[in-house]
Length: 236
Length: 236
DNA sequence: TTAGTTCTGGTCAAGATGACTATAACTAAG
DNA sequence: CTTAGTTATAGTCATCTTGACCAGAACTAA
Image (cartoon, rainbow over all chains, first blue to last red; front, top):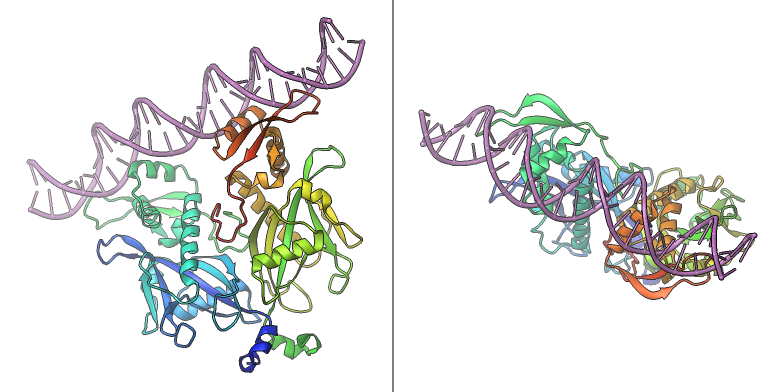
């Protein structure tokens, strides 16, 4: 690379470098309660700065791909997954995000379905963590994850986002569990189902979920837009 | 500049360049009805590409300023104004935004108060336009303005943003006019004022607006957060 | 057969919303 | 000085939404 060998004053004159990072959320059963919880994959830094710490998956922007494509690519490269939802989160460009050089990161956030998430690659340097129990991350990545969580909660309240954490068929109780996991509070089952049933994009199927311990719940399907952002103006 | 003299293959290898642009909204009376309307300043391109067309104010990111500072700076440099609200809109990074090189633009949107807006610089190459009557703009700037308008409408519905288009003191009817201008529909005066009066951050002052043609309306004051974003999590 | 649990539909009161009416307070025309 | 015109402001009423709660239906496991 041209800039990597430059001295300090040359680095100063160089334009800020541009990177893409992705916050990837999936639902996994908690080890303790077994109830679904939010998890996300992180990669271990193998170089300075912050060598050894965990960080969001990311990398440079190749000149022949759009921002969203770059986010999808580094999602695929680190975890082997394809997102069911992908949206731009924010561009972080503070002066001191990295101690060695000025970096502007355009961060995306993604949701993946649990069938996918179960297949996710995991290795020495890629591991999944509970979103509410991350340690200290590299750079400003703790703040970025916090912001992504806040966005997720907001989008959830607005509508269409919960189904992208579930499979194609789901019960209304499963949707409620998603809300409870993300919002971290319990919701009245009867009131919650009344609200969902008033939405036209939630379609009742003729099938029921078998094999449970109690009365078999009806299965539903989401018929709204697939929801891969850019100008996908579903929500602010 | 190093890259400007490079040939095509060298340009390909170069990282995408990074720019900051700003969509600046202010309220001005319509020439026809006299009612307040949304306006925004544009600058004329004096070079190719798109020479002669109007474009959003913007420029490169200097290495010693944050993204928000850069947005505020080019706002000040083109119009002489200081924003009362400034928030990141979106990072636009499509492959073909500019015909000559790959540019990633981080776009901010701003609101300025009418007392300020009246003082705004205007010249041969800087002019204000009604937001609903722009012609064809340079690059993808029409789409960017559309997106900014959509965001403004959403933020308005959410709350705290309308007051940043008004001065320190305002009547409830003026707030309603802002809503009517932005949402482009009429609102019931009585119902609208009931809603505003239920908000604790709208404070009644002892004063009244004098000099009108009819019953003098009471003046109010907004006591909420000033609202210059980044992590100013007022709205999604 | 029965107890336990979830699924599902319903009621009820409190609060928010939209359409509308009525009065107050000012200016301008006569 | 009176009156018509206009905006400001308060209030009413029916409708819709929301949260708390109750009750029966449908299944499993003991």
